[in-house]
Length: 354
Image 1 (cartoon, rainbow, N blue to C red):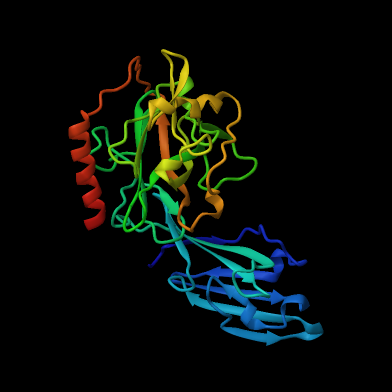
Image 2: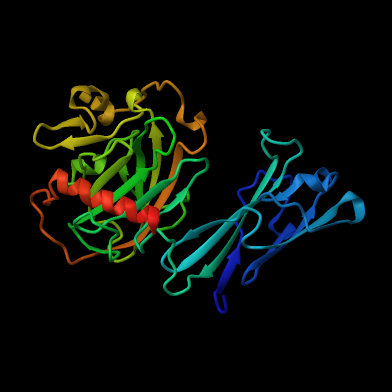
C-alpha cells in the first residue's frame, strides 16, 4: 500500500445538531482511518449509540459542559466500509451516525466519511474490467453491470469511444433462489463527475421510469433480451463533454415480470413509426404512451419499499468520447440471437468463475 494514499476528505450532508465540520476530523492512513468526533451534549449520553458503520467508538472521553470526544481507530477493511473503484482511485465510504433508538428507527445524525487512494497498477475486482461500473445496493441479490466489447463476448478493452460509435452497456441480476425477476433501467444520466450533485451538468439518457429518450435523437436502443434478468443498451456516443471524463449514472430495478406497468418498463422509440414500443411485449406498447408526458403507473408494490436489493444505483465510467466521429446512418450489426446468447452465456460464466 506504499504511496497509495492520495487524499481523504469528508463532505457533510448531515441532519446535524449544530455540528460543524471542525467537530469531526478524519485522517485516512494507508490501511486505516482515525476519526475524532467532538460530541455535543445532546448525543453524549450513550457512547454505544455513536457508530462508524457498525463499529462503536474505540475510546470515549467526557469533557467539560457535558460534551465528549469519541475516537474511531479502525482498519479500512473494518466497520462495513464500502469500496468503489475508478480507473484512477479506490474510494472507501462509510457513515458516522447517532442512533438514539435501535434499528429500524432511523439515525438522527449522519456524516459521510470518504477516503480516496491511488489505485494500484493492475488492480481490478475479480469480475470487472476497466470499463465496468460501481454497483451500490444491499440484500442477497447479486448485480453486475459493465460496458462490453463490440461483439458482446466480454468487457470492453478501452474506455475511449469516437463520437457516433456504439457503447454496449450490459446489466444483469443473478436469479439465485429468488422468484423470477426482470431487470429494468429506470433512469440513466451522463455527467462529468463520479458523484451526483445538484449543480451537475447532466445529459438525460433514460427518464420517465424507463423511457430511452436519447433514442429520439440518436440510434440508441435497448436490444432484444436473451434473458429477463439481463438487459442490454446500445448507447450511441453523444456530443456531451467531448474529451472530458464522462460517467453514466443509472438506477436499476429488479422487478416482477408479471407486473410491468407505466412505472416499471423499458421503452424504445421507433423513428419509423414515431411511436414508443415496449421492449418486452409489443402487445403492451400502451405502457409506453406516457413517455412523451409523465408516467405515473401504479405498481403492485413500491420499489422503494420492496425487499432490500431490488433497487440499485450504478455508475459506469469514466469514459471518454473523442471528436474522431463516425458517421452511422443505420443501426450497427449485432450477432444473431443464437450466437449472441452463446457469447453472453460465456461472459456470464466468466463473471462467476473469475
